[in-house]
Length: 604
Ligand code: MN
Image (cartoon, rainbow, N blue to C red; front, side):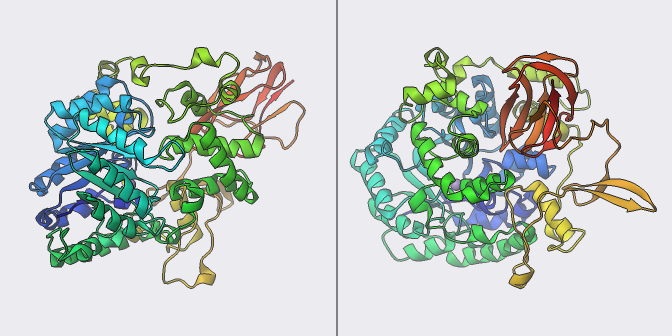
């Protein structure tokens, strides 16, 4: 018998609907889902925590409690990113431990724990803690293809994870690249090595060969498969639950699940799918077998194309593909999953736009220092020298990255005490500890729930609608109704989220905000208008948001001084002075969006 792990309440909508499914969409069907008899149900973790507080004005802890109450018979699982927990950066051990305690207390039964680099040191603390609180630990390895990621590599690490106390294992093929042969060989290898605990295969349909991979996995003795109810399956999401159940029926691997009940559940999720139709992306629904060739995950690929477009270099597509593969090899073949996919992707874009390793984002440096964990293969000295400088050896850490972090819980707790209106519960402190800005806004009651398709003030194909969608979902490049004729499907305009509107001869600045309405921006302290060309003009090397302005008018700077930091492609980079002189004028302020080549300062 094979069992299924159901993804409809987490990975499915994270893959297809930008993680926007709400608790109100889940509860009406919870009772039916609870009757299926799944191995477990994924309900939490990944991006759901962030999206709930950032876009849905929903308390993620409350979702967990409500789902637990509504599905008492099904083990509830969360995806836990080792020391990144449910975010994208490293947290100290005290936060990781506390988080797992709270998650268990609020309803998580199974913890699926993974590390982007498969550095088992990063997984030790969460595994140990989850065991301590009496939860089931599903230890997970990120799947990728490279000369170091052999079948033996995976088998050896799985044996190690069993020794570390895991209750079950999982191959996390987040990019949907696993071939039938690889799936068979790894699972067979694990079984032949005498591993006793069950093994699960998690994949996405991206490559188009996942159904075959699942069949071979079953033949090799896989115990659990990851699937999602069909309306939010296929393409960049997982294989459909009902189809897998039907395919295994009357075989020795029969799940025993009630297909009629599943089809009932399917009908419900068709409506949920339609509720978020402004988020449908045709390309996400299609197979992309090119992944088998270039091995870049679909999500990362569309992000790279988007970044190129933003930097005005969409003609460099082929070059980017090749450079991504080169950078990944040079950085020791990290699996391309958040956050390492970001490190590799942005470095590749920088290399193509500015020359190889001429611009090095902070994240690449951190990665090479070992702050994400140990790269799967060693990085060559010449690359280390380029990234970290001639004294690179002194910068590299040998310990677990978390060993360098100060405990954070008490500090965050006392900071939150400054807000007497916020109830000082452990759950609230955790929201604030993990997402200090967005979390605080949520806790203060200032967050607003985003629109759904029916609440859009304008037709879905209207340019302003697209601009609104684009502001919330930079990865969405084109939206249209499926019923629309192809000639009317126009690409989303390039982020025109701010407009100047004339009303009775007076000029207003109008901002499109993601809550569905329009706000008229208040007059803000303005900076002088950016000149096109000017003597001593410092240009922004890329499109992005100014995070910090590090100098003020009148400051004397020398070559290499940091003038400002800019966030581009979700990464922070420094803009440095190329000439010494005095800061004569500053044309930007923190929070401004700049384009590549915009003059941000004058230094003479
Ligand atoms: Mn996934």
